Image (cartoon, rainbow, N blue to C red; front, side, top):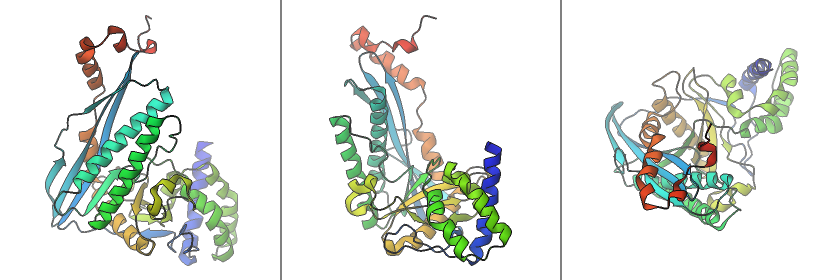
Length: 365
């Protein structure tokens, strides 16, 4: 079944590539769902000349115990400076290997709430470091590992989670504003996107227009009709891996349908979040890139962002990630044993039962 689905995606992508030669997307100026007229764009490489690029990532571990939960989190910004196409310096904020922050959680949270809290703490730490990294001299672009919008929208189960969510949305909007004021290109590189937003656009807005307006042969029309249903069970990257070739990107689209409930808390910024997919190398799937732009600047910013991602991601033919984010990821990662060592170090200061492992981790057999 999986192999058959892959073949259907391949055949569907083949038809779309044929159709794109004489077909323009129905640009939606009012709702900004589709803001570019081509389905696929060639992407060049931005010259790495007199450029300073920041990449931010975080690492987190958590240890649920009998009497409390321990969270260990850190974030780091790698800041690369380029001249004449060469990397000339690498700086780090706050330093090359930040000491992780220990967070004790005493509230009686269920496992789902704890997972949300852990994710929120990590995201807040990353956003704090990102804002601080903007103080680096002459920074031109700032890349976050992951989305540039809050991901923990299910925050209804407790006052603490609601407060943290408010902190996150405020931190994101502060970051948007500071990047705009300093003319810094803010990007989110989602390396393992599970979104189906773009394939939904193909199903709801594009296929019918292709059939109406593209000069497809009868065999192409039949192939589209026979295979388009595969997108109901496809993620964006699963389809785009067939549609895009190395050095290409998809059209730009609005982050979410308007009005987007999940963006409401971003207030004036909710209609300025856009995304596209880019495939910098042959042997890796496309990466999702998100950015902030005023509607009239979307296409220009998308082209600029794609060419920069392409330049920073083309060093290895099987890894489509910007090198500055690979570096930040490596330095932010926390070894699994680190939180256990920390637990052992503080155990003598607390009641013995407080630090007991959960029963599922200390079975006698």
